[in-house]
Length: 123
Image 1: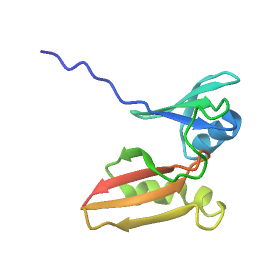
Image 2: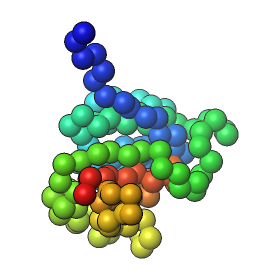
Image 3: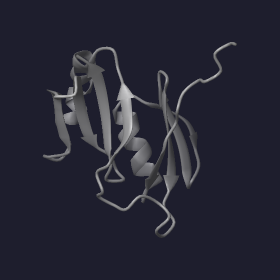
Image 4: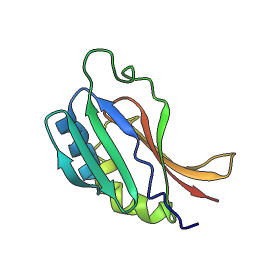
């Protein structure tokens, strides 16, 4: 049987789609679709669908759950690339890269919806 799966693209519920798109573009993602209440961004094989909250239909703000985990080959190279962007983010919005006891080195970035966008590499 041929491989059929391409990628998983989670939905990020946000209060401001424009801010969500800008966040991902600063992290090197390309915007392929952008409407007033929906956008699709992708970097290599990692895609995220950004959806406008309408009332309480999205994730509660500030919940900081791990909803977006992107496995990478070289976390140090990604961190070096993103460092100028990360350095201007608010204090506390960026953690790592740091080795975790479960065998991953992770770079955690607080996303516009209050969840964590995490890039991880096996160590």
